[in-house]
Image 1 (tube, rainbow, N blue to C red):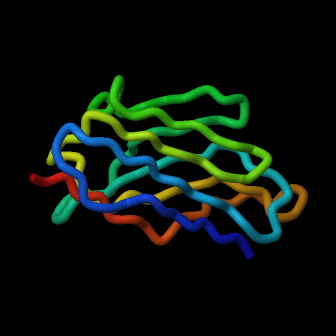
Image 2 (cartoon, one colour; image 1 turned 45 degrees about the horizontal axis):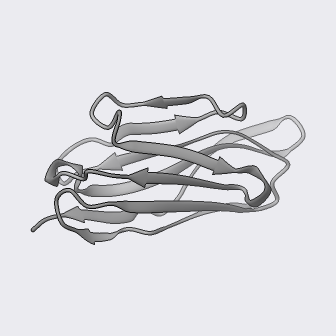
Length: 120
């Protein structure tokens, strides 16, 4: 079993910052890429950012220059630093990881989500 647990969400004013964390735990053999997705009310879940095992990153156009994804492999943790937040960034943010539990068995895992609300 693998669990992904997000933290760091909350209420912030426009222009403010938040840092999300996602810690993976359980019977982990190896972690490939990890990423963040978000889902706003009434909308489909959308890609936000991704970081590979080699620390290559990719971002949605809507967050480029404002969000930064990093990872700490020793802690099996991925972070999302969000700056210059806008009301349109309001959503539930989900962590995703492509994880090998047993040698040769790769699967996608998701966290339970953390709410980010940007409002004055």
